[in-house]
Length: 382
Image (cartoon, rainbow, N blue to C red; front, side):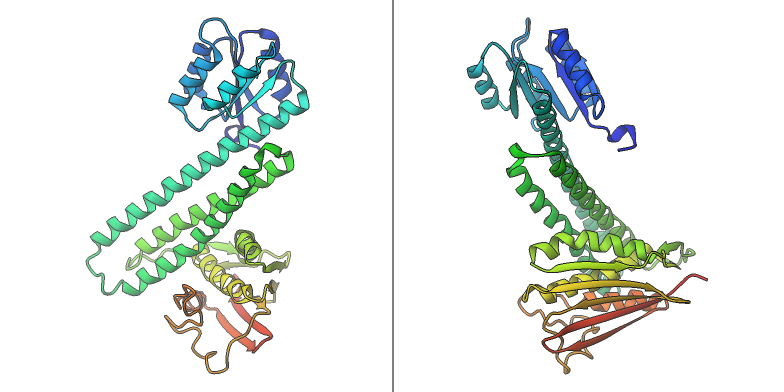
């Protein structure tokens, strides 16, 4: 973590300076630590700093930790709270758990155990906050979409574009849902969490946020249809986009029993184009291959190779293949071989349209019972 805002924050509330300073020194290498000597001061810091976890003593003069827990839950019902208990006050600790504490540790505490408990609870808070942000983003996207649909006067001419947008939005939302499911399973077993698991959860959170951002970009792109302004296309890296797509689809492939692997050349493979459009095209082709291989629990290999004037992107699966009578129709809009499997018949059509709009080409070769290979060729920037 490099930015100061990304450093997890921990608030320690304890009337004794010894435990406060011990925790501050113990956690300082990995966390931004705030301390308070009473509940009132701690509540004030909670409002100012919005910590990821609170560590609070149960027995304090004035307002007790139990009463402090009630106040904290009124302010933030989902913030992780770890109670410190001494004097063998096990029943009080159990009462704290009933009132909404997430964990408790007895004094004197073990340093290693404390680090594990703090790491687990910080991750719990961050996962919940990320889920809330994603839900809010999706709600806002839906509101924007409804508003735009109400304002469009030429809905007939935008019918095809609307269908494409709905299809494209489904891909990143499917990825988001896959990683939310993974995180939910991990949180079920979070009591035995480890540093390695926390690091993995952080990686998965970044994929969720990346795909929510893609949803926003797709909506912005859709809103611009019909605009007469033609801005120059920036330079983008096909290799980087392939890495992003494969990383994002990893959860879907794993849950479908499909082995997804990528062989990407070290060259960035730059071209002048629209990164969101190219990503939606590649994503559609790769997801199509994963879905084709799901029934046989097969494999999908994505290969990116730089040539002198162009880049070749091959997506190869060992699924059931495409029947000869259907292979000439697969790029037609609304044609699908996924009857009763929620196929819209737009994914490959969108991919072909985007690639040709970037002066590229897409070809398909397929053998029944052996698999299918899609080859995308795009011209490199001069």
